[in-house]
Length: 138
Image (cartoon, rainbow, N blue to C red; front, side):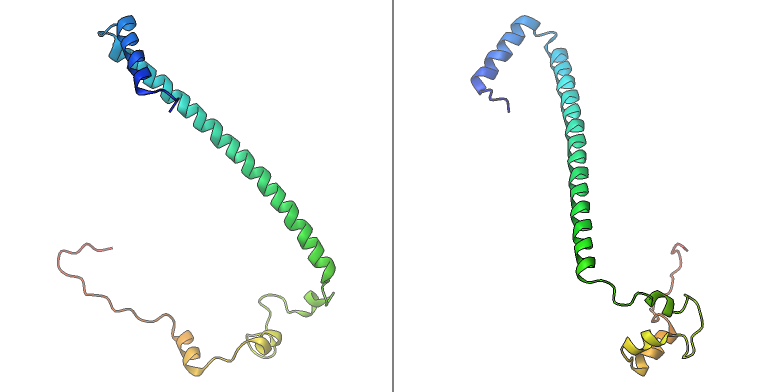
């Protein structure tokens, strides 16, 4: 702990019994325990604050690194279609081919009829045990 050997601890206990006295020794040990506990709590609080500051600095460094990488990637691969957002229909707008916009329908995989029917039916039915007399109601 503090590099105190058992023989040194025994000498400290003997001196404490002589100086403090056996009558007041339990109260003194209780006070020492409180002081040590408060010191440990303050050290833990200090360590937590330091760890939080270190994490914030690391996050700032990572954000700078990610911003630099993002800038580099955007310079290497510029957007190919400058006005692409204007060609897309507005969210919720009706399309000529149904509910799915044509650019999505072309790239979407074709689903089987069973999958389409399952999606239309909703979630599958889960059988539950009937409630018994005395069961609590939800």
